[in-house]
Image 1 (spheres, one colour):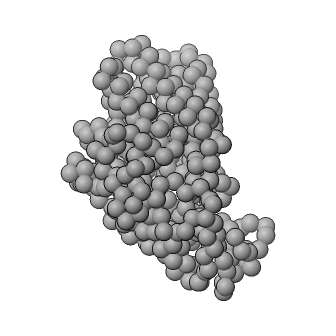
Image 2 (tube, one colour; image 1 turned 45 degrees about the horizontal axis):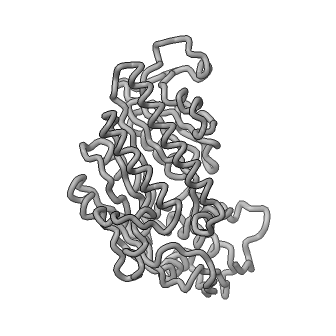
Length: 361
């Protein structure tokens, strides 16, 4: 078994069973890293490419203390016998969180779990890494934290045509959900550990990342995946899909490959952040439905559910800072990303035991 790459690069991906985390594992392997993935579950839609995948609960402090230690032999994971592979990782990518789409975040029914579970994971990661650094008398592990555009103030996102999501607009703070408040708290947590314990951190605020192998049903899916699923399930002619709200709320959406590239650039830079990683191609949800309908090659009728949870009225990434600091900008159009995502979701829908035809949602 090959434990490390020739240059010794190792990475720990937390939340590696999820959408973005599983894609990051794949990219790190392409870049020559030895990768350990950790999550409550393995990836749902493909086999993990991690060298080692450990299933466990990151809200458990003792569990986190174990996984932050690089050990090459999975069989000896709980047996701290050999000292050869008991060093800190070079990099940690922290994606693990209690989260979901608007139907999960904005109803208020999951607020306590969202705040408690996610904050506990981040405290466990930082405290475990700090303790390991002290034991080994090293401080080499760079930690990436995935924050969210949900931490931006609600009052700056009331106008769907002119939302303000520049990084310096974060304060005075007023997120529209407990999910956003937890993300803002955890940003400050990582920066505090950087100041007080010199732990190298990088922080990005993701703006609606989408693509193949993302959750597309079950209540935690984001709007691009939900709309792709709904369009895939309706009849070719005359199908109706449910759209939450009046559809005039605006968002921008970034394809997964672009997100991974920007994150890798951030980790390889000297810039800590926080920085937006998103697209500036803002569209209304009604326009998003039209883009998906075009990708599907079939017209659909929109039925608006006006009492559905929505989040802010408008949100769009501002990429001025990331262009300045990292020289990065997105290259794919929303239409290009939706075409790839719709094709994948259509394939998933057609694999289901029921027929997708003549379904109105």
